[in-house]
Amino acid sequence: MEERPEIRASDAERQAAADRLRDAVSEGRLDLLEYDDRLARAYAAVTSADLARLFDDLPVLEPRSAPRQLDSAALRAALERMPTVLRVLWLNWFLVIAVNLTVWTLVAVTRGDADYFWPVWLLVPGVLLSGATAAVSAARRRSLPAS
Image (cartoon, rainbow, N blue to C red; front, top):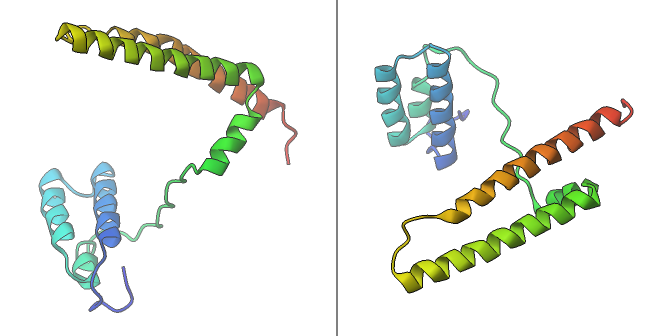
């Protein structure tokens, strides 16, 4: 974890240790009882040395890269690369969802019961639209020249 074991462990280090323990279970290196015990010790760890002791009998693994966060600039760039027809379809779908959720909420509040959530059926076209978007994106990636 740290080069100086007396350094207090951060929440991020405890979470990284928990993730590494989860990976050890999925690889079959720890059984569930060992995992549970070590996970409790990971979250209770005070210093980096406490965390390091959890992995004494486990192999050293390459650190996993952090999941890439989709920031607003990346989202904007992805939307700009999307064909106009797909952008229009997605916008229409979101507007239909918003209108239907508003109508359902108003009806449920005025009637006093919310027993059937009929806007769930709007997920079907959303799934189809997702598939179409994925197919178009894959086709565009295949048609790009290799760099």
